[in-house]
Image (cartoon, rainbow, N blue to C red):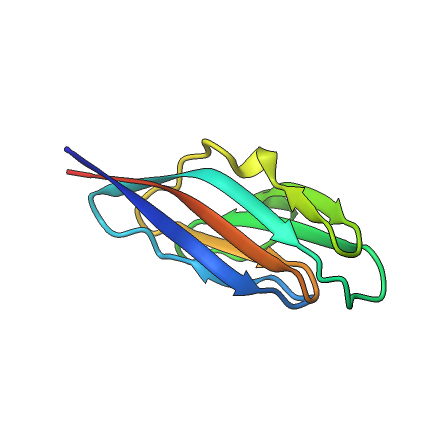
Length: 111
């Protein structure tokens, strides 16, 4: 068994949930260890950031929603609900948050 630290994403989000990481490779599990969203000082107001763990063939819906944070202008918000979740083979990470940058890292455990 091998554990590797990885960056899951560093993505500028839109207002619609979009793929930011995945799918998790066969024979692996990914556990996010850090996740933050930054709303730039040029933003017009606070932004709601939402994250979803979507199984293979699924979609970003209420059933796959795992975290939410409202990020003020020029601020960073932590997505603590995502931390230590287990993403199984085939799972994907989706996020929305118009104009915010989502940065997430974690561990990939492989057989």
